[in-house]
Image (cartoon, rainbow, N blue to C red; front, side):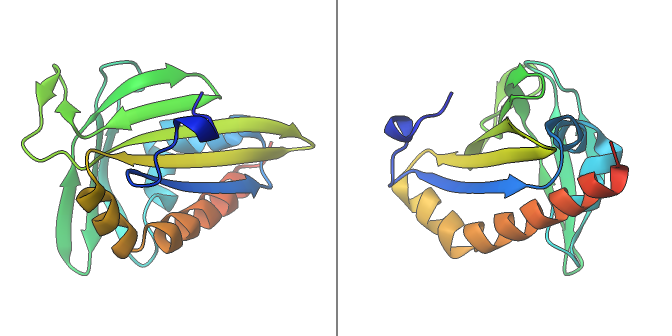
Length: 160
């Protein structure tokens, strides 16, 4: 669990939302490529390719199209706790090969609030303060906030 005491304000960016969708559906949206492609980047940008091997050491690869440019993100899962927690990083690729220019590790938690609601928390942990500042200036809170709304809407469309 990532508690408030684990957070470093110079390295960690945090987004927390209560989503009006059940935890099982939010989990499916995060762990099945056909769903992740629908919401994972702020529209009108889109995910054009996605490989999710949701297991420790499995690939967590996405390719985005942003204003006509392709952005590849290659990484691995570090921790997988079904319907509760995903941790993935771009510091390594499949086979635990170090990435040449890692950017962040994401810690995403899903807490069941009951009544079909989920507390969703995403922590973007960076290797240094400059990387965190860059991510903040890129629009972390607005971007990840928009994506959380898109996630909620997509999960709601899946039904129970």
